[in-house]
Image (cartoon, rainbow, N blue to C red; front, top):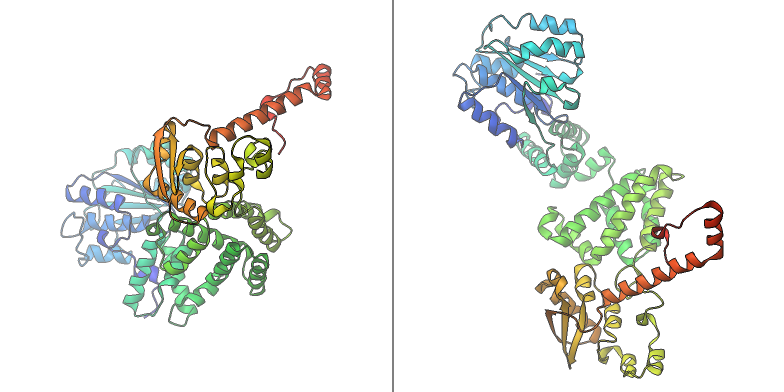
Length: 528
């Protein structure tokens, strides 16, 4: 007996065997069980998601000798013939090869005749969008009012090309792309049934390469079995698909965490030496960064088997660094076609990630503190120029005193980001008593306050002052200017100064008078 490919051997023969597409199966099952059957169904979706399969199961349900049911017996002559593709009353038409109006008219001439064997004569028209405009016109009247013994099942990957008049005459079901988890689970089920050894990582690779198509996944599985000589292993699947080894991605992530440019370039050189695709390396890095970001937000979201490896990277990389690396990588992937060659483009993207990585211990946030701000002035100058008790600001970090005047400086030395940073920037120091800090949070920013963020801020202060402390945050109106308002004020002052400087510039005024021009204030930026 000749070999039957897995995609045909494991094609579902009942609604219960379908993987995914519950949103399509449920209304069809209910319609069959309650005998509320429309005369025309349109199934849309990408390749290999089950359009033709569902249409054949529906045709079998309509013509099963035991009666119309959502659970055809599968053993009667009609069911067996439908499964084998030789049921005389199931007319399958490939619209891509029968686009002419004469072909459609010839097909419709037989609609009036009763079914030969079955209960219904079912027309299954695949890739229906390929029909010509005249063919659709010839089909319209029959599609609207077909004989009671006729059902139309239409399938297409491009419903946008169908006339609205056709769409309005059909019940439309849009089949979704299948998730990698569903495809991997089905592949493992088939491998278990076939008695073929495999590892879970290999099925995940195949499921990812299938790109939402179960048929593509089964075809790749057939290829992987042949490539591996009767077994499916991760390493061989990677070679077959031309994907990047996970070890190379791990080395890149460790190099980014350590700021090691030499390690990054060495990894790229190693990947190129083994004949792998540089663009693929960048894509795998982006996928890894995505999974790391999910793990940092919530470990349950990652959904990967390599939890230990993912957790290690999530601990080594700061969330803001992960977001920065992902965005730089995304832009680098987009611009890869403009690089002298892919290797140069990938190397420059990785070096750009290191170059734009925030310097540890710097000021809060990515934007630099303006020179005009007193926060940026050296502490010794403050101590000699101001009558305030500034000498406390130059004490050793472990025992530094805190006051409303140096609260911005304290925040500038703390290591945190995100919403915790925003919380701190909108507070002022009300009082400090020994190891206790009392802060006032602006009432307008009450949504920033949570136990988790307060705990992270407390932890950062304890690291800064070298010991345990108590932190209390209450809502109210700050008695002093918050760091956030201070930054906004300084930025506004610098912007106003920049506008005045441009407006008073004699060259600018000469251009305005000569060309009757005006300055767009929105285009003026202060010098950095």
